[in-house]
Length: 369
Ligand code: OSB
Ligand code: MG
Image (tube, rainbow, N blue to C red; front, top):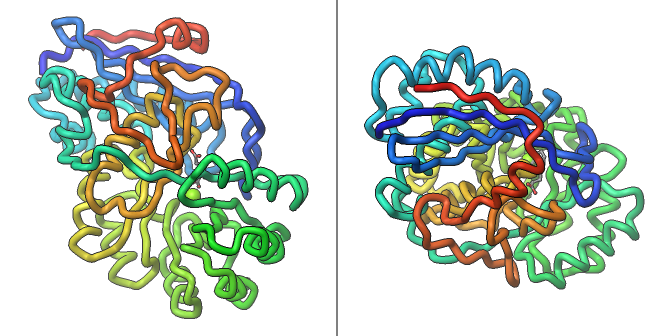
């Protein structure tokens, strides 16, 4: 692939509004953009979805910089890469650190598609020309505030509304929302805020006609989730617990979930994401593409992945304007009536807004390959 240079950029972008999950509140987004250049001056872009703090998983922006500089780039320097599918194998000697791996692999996938002059969606084997999306709503100060927010997203046409839940902000709140919006596709995401001791409490979700409940129990569990799924009719969707195809196979075999949220960063890159997708298609397990408050570059990767056929449920890839005053791609991602048109240009299919990219860059380093 004639890879010549890697640049690691650290960015900081202020969110339009704070976003609260069961594990904490985000007011801004610190993240990495990886640029991989070839000998012809073509550039591929990848995004690390690791957060500044290790509260979703164990990775952070700083640990990602360390892994990329000390281990991932040297692994690329060993011998040439001829196809992006070789990258995850090349990185396989390193345990976990999936978000760091994915950021580098994603840049190489984008570059590869640009070298082929084809959309990333097409080189991944995607078929959809447009994708359905939903939106994820954080924990609010009041039910009134939440209902107002739900209303605005329903009015904007989002296909599914996801509401973050935690102990003290769950059944009663969702019941109020369901009362106001009797027919919307609605779900809850707990980000591991419960244990099996809450089983009787969580069973009350079954009265609310939810499309699913996402990751109710521990971030590394698939056993208790199986016991909970056995006791509930609401489908359980796993997010945090699935890091690989091997994890997906075990969770499906055990009956720990009926749906899987695929996040490219969490599973170590597009190649592994596609493998999980293919297996879920075989097993008739619906999948959807999760979000990590990405900039437009990560969002574009999510859109490309979502064109694969088993992405039958709306994902979390909302419009750029849902998060940012200004995004780093041009045009920005726009969901119209909950539908995003898949870009047809080469690679991720969006231009980089170089001015915005510079504005939000707080640090960078470049390594020759
Ligand atoms: O669990 O899906 C999650 C945001 C931060 C960390 C974890 C999650 C989320 C979201 C928002 O739900 C997804 C998005 O809108 O990008
Ligand atoms: Mg989640």
